[in-house]
Image 1: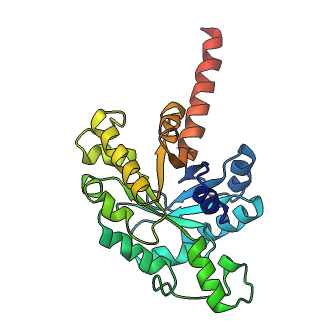
Image 2: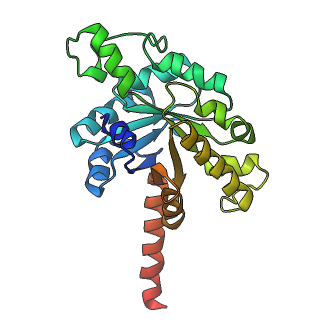
Length: 256
């Protein structure tokens, strides 16, 4: 479950997708068979409960694919529950300041880095009996924390956010960022591109991973070539709806 962080630390590319509607845990096996290395359970815009998230993480372990959970807000319970369920890490939306990033780390990391509540015989360690000091250190090292830069405020503070210890990745939310920049939906606009490049520069300066979500292969490839190594392609909704729509159009065109 924690292999993606190690790959990213080695400078490798990891490719995933995001789900916000499908709830069948077998989606983990489908995505693993496609070659995805992780998927994000979107609990910001999706409506998953903790039990469903736990079941899907358990299936993902069997499928050998990592799970990142996008939480709805910076809140102790929102951060603690997915990690105790065995998520490889978290994606935290709307992180606009270094202080907010530090608050995430306080809830996500055990002492001395943070103040995460400890329940040491849970799904996150497969219910094994562990040596507490060794396990806490290992868990802190393995847990992957990505914070989202998706507002003008976050871009203004991006270097300070990237400097926060314990943050592994700065993840661009392109659509929300375009709205904040006053160019809704124009994710290819020069103003947006400039903002995203500021994220890349801050990540390079502070030795953090740059991440991004794109729904077009061409655009995702462009950012991968600019050192965005935590790459998220499309979503369950888009892949299903677009594939079905294209097939229906082609089939109906058979008869003109």
